[in-house]
Image (cartoon, rainbow, N blue to C red):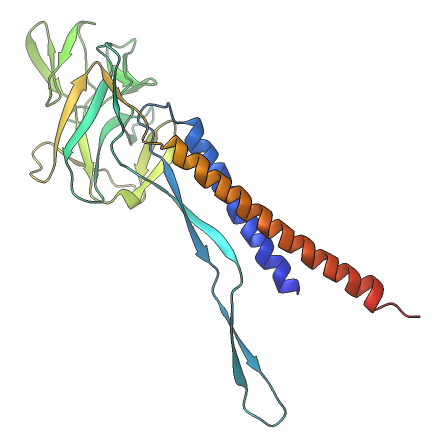
Length: 262
């Protein structure tokens, strides 16, 4: 019976974490470039039960499950819808050919020099005249920040920056062939799980893309589906809660009634 307490509690905790994940997805439904998370639930290892009798070999009774847990939250990198804004600093990354389990991303440089990746193209021109995201400079194909000599500039489909009719830097696009190796850091930024930098997409024959100035990529959150999954998680939580309450009542009777000395 005590094992039942742990099994039901594990189910409640897993569904609570799943609900928190779904709430975060819904809250970021309008966040540019946000990629929805999907929960991966997994059962704890099963235990093999055996019956032991005097002077006899143990006999197998069967296996028993010991509960479930939320193993990980996996970002889904499907392309989000493009929305026109008319702002020349807004740049959407449109994937036209990417291998399965792969994705393309912008690169930005943090104050400590570390490189992070994002699909949020809601950029701005910072005080240093650089194209930036939340103050972090956007990197070009040469690994350096994109310098803008003027507020009036044009971004060509291949990422080339043209100011006053003259071509300058090219916005760097980076390719990951294993999205499972990307880790969310918050604020729309990602890093690689092993700390290595992603390779450039420019010149890679396996990928193709276009940059669209004056557009941003929206999130890929399916709000209706997220609400449906949240209701399912709530019901699963309540079911485990009722099982836990039933075990509690049984234990109460076992302690206070069955075991009472009269």
